[in-house]
Length: 457
View 1 (cartoon, helix red, strand yellow):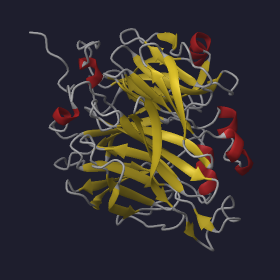
View 2 (cartoon, rainbow, N blue to C red; view 1 turned 90 degrees about the vertical axis):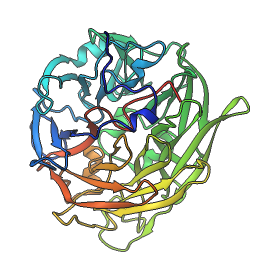
View 3 (cartoon, rainbow, N blue to C red; view 1 turned 135 degrees about the vertical axis):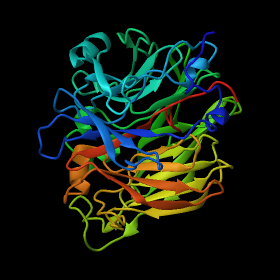
């Protein structure tokens, strides 16, 4: 009898009943550290019954330098169970792009999950030749192929967009968009598959961001829109501006229930007061709209500020990542400037309630872990499928790390325990030190809250 991959689930409700994760894969990079070493993917033991709990138990060092590993994802996931999916696939390969190099690595996790094997490398020349895109970012496993977003074109300008890889050969197929309209800036993307809707967000073109943040660029060169696409026709159908004063619309988190056409996006900074905000985007009365549902103000500070913030005498929250639990109940928010992770109950998406808060690192708090010093601050968040654990790492982007944390960022990962009724607590026994490498995205073996999409309620 034919059997599908046991880590594929038709609905988020079913995925929440999956076995607990035992391994976390972490992107580790040396860009910005002054060390000319290849980046690596670390495997961390996250099984509390294991003698190597909270330790690095394996790694794969990549063959090139200068990649700057950032976001990565699986070759296949629960979207394979959609009506137009390919259920004979398996969640086996990690698709790992270099944000600076535009190189793509395929890591095989099947034979030895603790020590993935480099199976294939797609060089940047092939990516650029076949798509015109460079600086690769988000990876999603779609039912019909592997989707990867790109920040810009071959010259480091725009437009940015999305390219596709074949599910079986991993060949670069080409550019995804057929009718992009006026869309120019790119960053994240995700979708509601049954309704054939894709959503994309905006950061800036590579030539603007790569050398670090320049304040004079904020108003004109950073994005503040999200775009809605007909997924089948590959055509942009609408755009929504998230406040004229806001800049950097980054992480998109659609609700996992496919019957609800809405989701969240974080805006990093307001030009008006340096606050951060969370917006809810939704479809109502036949059109797309968005509403600010959370606003986080900056905190005053007279000392200890990096040069880039000294003129303002405040610490901006710098909300740089959000993640949504599979039951669509809790939204997790990282405040990379202040140094916090917050949990909001979003059972009513239009009226979030703050239900949990943990201090860690940060320009403002500088709170340490019982097991060691925390440089940088919470940045990337990953929530377990059952919603009980949140894994946190601390690097944003190498050149920006150096501006906001000039004392240096040493990579770490910590774990927060989430109360199913609301509330967060720090696991005081879990702190992973990646040494001089910086740590970015986490992927959990078997899936997590931001890797899979579902076609059934």
